[in-house]
Length: 232
Image 1 (cartoon, helix red, strand yellow):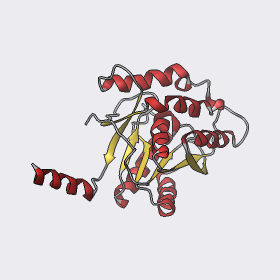
Image 2 (cartoon, rainbow, N blue to C red):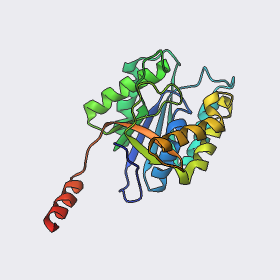
Image 3 (cartoon, helix red, strand yellow):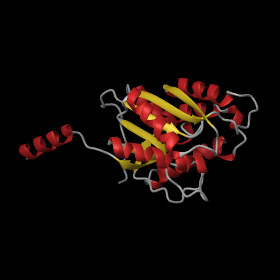
Image 4 (tube, one colour):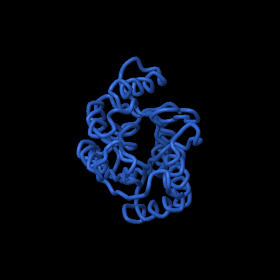
């Protein structure tokens, strides 16, 4: 399903993102979250770890950087202090359930599941746990694109972020402590965004890609469809 999304006509809703590390939310989804925010969505970002393996030696730096990014994309954050590479699926299930109870999200976005040899151990644990909760709670779930090693990721939903590409770049650049990583570089950000555009056959523009794992169609869709059939 190759499609693009417009958020302009959606009622106010809440999206909850659950990611292992601060910066995981902006790399694949800053543009989409910014568009949602502009359309009136409530953007809630849950970050699992405290950045103890961060490139910065100053405790709390990654969380401060996240809040700065949030001001750009219109998101609010909740932080946990799990130790990187040392937290369980059960721990993530618990905090995700707590967040759902508090925020009642209409949509959840998280890491795409990837085998550990291709991805980050924390991303995989997070993806498994959040998928478990979304399934049991019957909540729509999108997986966002990994920043590197796209093996196993099969996007079926694309969002045109051309109008907010500068905001995406600025949000990512808030993470100054991580700026030396190759996938945080400006050229890498633009190349990946253009790659998704070309996957859709677009000559211009920038896109973000998602894999819809769980989705529902509202009753209004069928009402409108029935109306069209009646008129034809």
